[in-house]
Figure: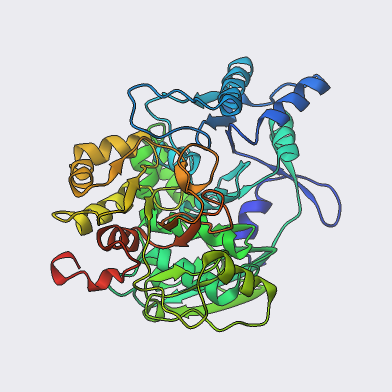
Length: 465
């Protein structure tokens, strides 16, 4: 029977069928961070259980870690420091690999795992973080789980799982110059809504998707959850194969040819049936920016904030962001610029920012930060001269971590500050109580830093186009 890629992946990992709705799903890799795992380990101890397969676990300190460029990082906040110590203790006790506070490979979990070759096509990867959908860029079934589920995975290497429905999002054509994968996913979310993919496993297809780099595909899959998707997938191709082979040192010789043969089968059958399908044209996409407090409240940079739709959410969003219907976002002054997060802190993102800002200066009165996604990205950016370009332009060059993506560390917005941000969520208070977040691409954030205003990066001049 014809099958979608999603069904092939989860059905190949069924350890047992529990009833007509639920299965026991085997997990190839489980990733943890410091804030969703403590209760899970406590539950193990209370029940006298141990970790079933420590070698298939990995942990990272990323959400609460400071990113200021000190030689040795020390978490000053007491509760945060306790979370980090508890994670280190739990990993030592159960034999789990940990990228701790000052580990050279420390970084954001969804950046570290792929770049170290841990994510391969066909895997099931779970993590107590909703943006685990990122791994779909490599043809892996990744999704976030709750703390009680973290405990279950630690104890059994399985998850009680109810399969999702299938959705296909097809994007044809080519993205125009100045338009990125971040703009594309924000465009899609604005069209289908923040709940448009709720209950679905989304597979991205089409010529525009095939043209994207692996890092751009990660951005796409990362933010699919902002449309409510339970997971996101892109069929692995030659780009995915080469990306993994370059990083997975254990895959050598005959293992490589065997892996390539298996991965080539990981795609939806031509006659597979999806429960829902959406078609988009890449040429319709412009640089996008959010105006409200949900990722679907976004518009093209050359558009105006939509008129009130009568909903309380629309009115509340305008009140919180201090904007009004009918006004453009282009030209709106910003106080802060943040380039980072598991959505846009990879080397490809930083190269684009450096290309735009080289020889220019951050606008007076704007505080601009660049936080690389991992120690590896940071070193690569320094070796390539990117860090020097950013510093010369007036950006703060920080150490890796989730940083200002969320207000769980000391990188936060002050009340009323307006930020051009490459992150994935613009909820009220997400980057600091009373802070106002405008999501955009790294290129658009770079343009905002240089001009001090939300600016169409395509208008910066041919020399930097």
